[in-house]
Image (cartoon, rainbow, N blue to C red; front, side, top):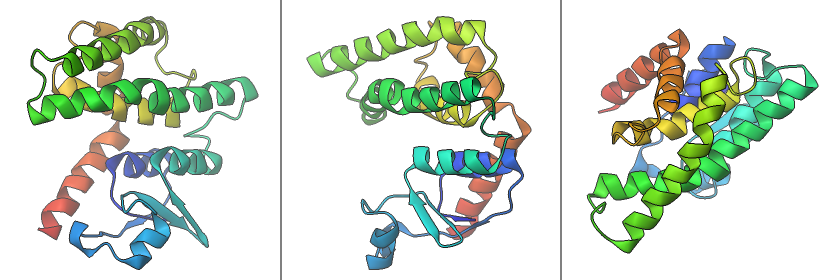
Length: 196
């Protein structure tokens, strides 16, 4: 496969041991071809033969179909992996993304918007905490759900938002200690450095 940016897709490809190559798309060079692959002008997208897939969740599901290292074959575990992948996107990221953006832009002061998103994130983490306290991985074995959930939690942890949630913090630490993540991140940073 060929993929455009995003270390979580690179991480999945490394976990699966699938060969891939990376193609860069400079932000200012988003042309009609780019929008043909990604209608919102974002990254990543993945081409696999004659398939072109955009959106991280869709890409991870596609890769899960190609590798048991990413998606359990047992129907019950598979269902868990799919539901947790969507939970990462729809339940946790819905709260974590605005929270992280407010933190990043310095707008996390005493405002109604900040209080709303801070409370929203704390509620989501409160419900995630006992799950990851009882399980090493969301679907029994490591899967695409863990890649996506870890990716969603990384910016929260960057701004110390997991401080009151030790099981979430430990879960994230387990995920990003995996050799495939370490390699994917190092390769991603080297790719960005070479592009400058």
